[in-house]
Length: 107
Image 1 (cartoon, rainbow, N blue to C red):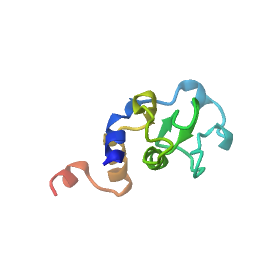
Image 2 (image 1 turned 180 degrees about the horizontal axis):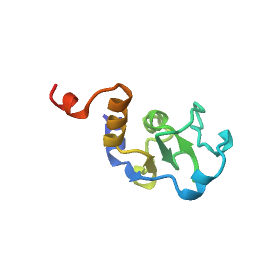
Image 3 (image 1 turned 45 degrees about the vertical axis):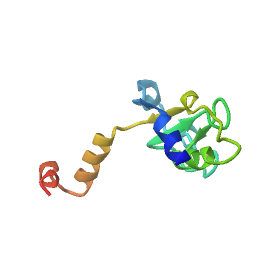
Image 4 (image 1 turned 180 degrees about the vertical axis):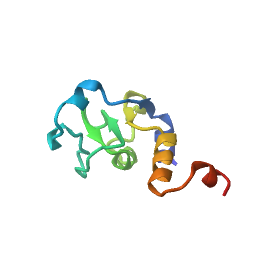
C-alpha cells in the first residue's frame, strides 16, 4: 500500500521535446538513463529521488520509495515527466497493430 500512496502523489508533467534538441544530431550521450538499470528513459522518468538531478525509471522509483532509505522522501518534491500522453500511446499502439481506433472502441 505504501507504493500506491507514493505513486498517487507524484507530480505529473507532460513535456514535449524542444526544437533545439530536435535539431541536433542524436547520440547516446544525449539520452537520459536510469541510474540503476541504465535503460534509456524514452517515455517517462522520475527526477530528484536519489539526488537533485538524479534520473530513474518509474519502476525503480517505486521500488526505491518502498525501501527504508527512501520511505520518508516527500514525493511532492519529485518530478515525474512523461513525453507522451496515454491517449497518444494508445493511438500509436493501434496504428502499429493496424487497428482502427473506432473498431477497438466497439469491442
